[in-house]
Image (tube, rainbow, N blue to C red; front, side):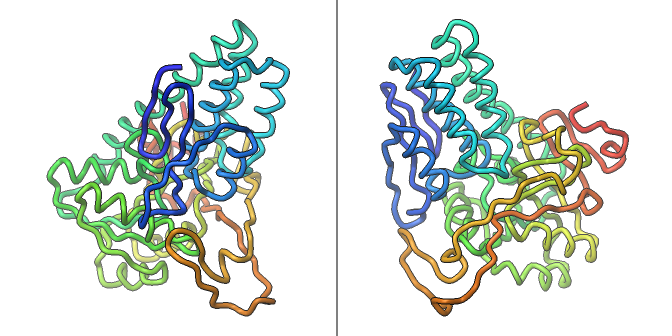
Length: 338
């Protein structure tokens, strides 16, 4: 395979390395990923995260293994294991399905070509999203975002953060409110780090501060990503997104969903059909990783820890896909993805 490099994924000499996002922002550590088990573990530990990045990284690993001589039968079995690594984000499933289809002819060359195509496709999709999303951001806007949707979550410039980045680079002099994003602090650790690297003016806030800022008129718009969008426009995203949508609806603040068309799942009629991953209780009771370790809850505390929530379509101002900007009226007539 050709060498490929992104902010959190690097393929060199047919060896795949992953930037360990659990160590950010304090440490930039690259981990070699040379087996299906290690990739599954990295996905589940969120060392690699973000729906597009997970899908691309999994495909690159499968393609390198195919090129190194893994039989097609074993390739199919390994693809099945990776496909089930995270249940909510649909990009992983879509990308692997594309590889499986490609493997039906001229294996393994066809798999390598498809994995490389998916890599460059994601870069192109992100560029389109950035342009379209930027068109919705006005000069001097104060933009609020949740979780992390930048280069760490994709192999391009990002989705929602891609639009924010484009607005900054366009000289619009925006300011960004970064939700810390409990319980795993992807906003505080990752988005804040990306904003700093890009030179975008930002301020980090607790998730619970968003409503107060909206009430004060300090938020002009909210931009979030998505892990899966249902046919009716309902979408799953990092836990806390639904709360933001309710707040924006009450305060009449525009609420935009920015995601590639690969995130749309037309087999899901509504958000009720989207499976929601539940994660380890320790994530709520404390923190651990490269940023330290601290436990603040009783050891025997019962915990409910869904990783995602579903936001209904009627709370969305517009969906920004690489294929265009869709209004609620568009969604009602089934125009999502045309």
